[in-house]
Length: 322
Image 1: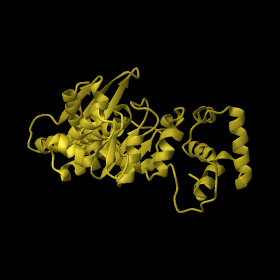
Image 2: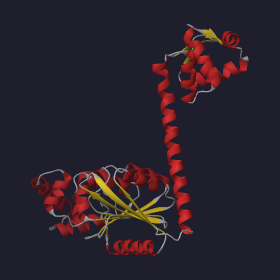
Image 3: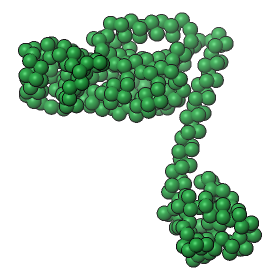
Image 4: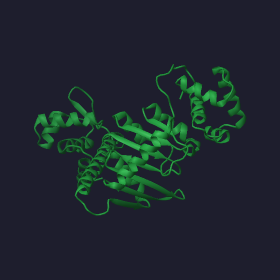
């Protein structure tokens, strides 16, 4: 790459102009002192020293002697700088998405048009990510299959860590999905999600703060329709629907009981029993045979001195195992 092209690319990656010039000159030389660099580039000594500090911070230059420096080859030294630029771009994308949603919500308050937006196809997942990035306080969700995203819910785990409140009502069908309980539900519950289970859920729905709700309807697992409802009577009705489902649902976990040590796989099994999932579906969700499932149930009954799966589920709740 020509030196002018290298200079432009280094600036594009976020390197300062003086640092880019010093780095380009160092690449031509085996080694150089800060005084030699200042003379060759016509820069003040303090600016060269500042540029060298920037280069050593990013791993693009190394000190060879007390006042001598060598350049680190680009294929080695530019990785960290490129990753930092990628992180800056991602933060900017989230900030723009948040600003967009803030503006949209403000506009809807004075808009007399229909407070419903419909998104279809490949744009659905990106739109959901934009919406989720703008949450301020709480997300409420009715969770039933089919699901748009994969098993691991990294976005929720990050937001729980930030202090966002999650209240989620799951259908038994969600908990029966292979890997969903262990990969999605339990990690989020352990991180602070308030989770309940209802026998039937009428819709797959998410409510963001008190500002909007969306309902997702996947089609063949590839395409989807996303209906977003903004402030108004329809949103209030959807919030009321969630409140009803939340009240009739049973907690997926209990808190405050004795914290007896129990294996993670047994906790998942007990959660499925507590949610009323059938034996065959529970075994499938856990990835074990029915024979292994029954053997583990018998072991847990022996541990809790119970004689039925119902008694076992009650004992698990009482012991704080869920």
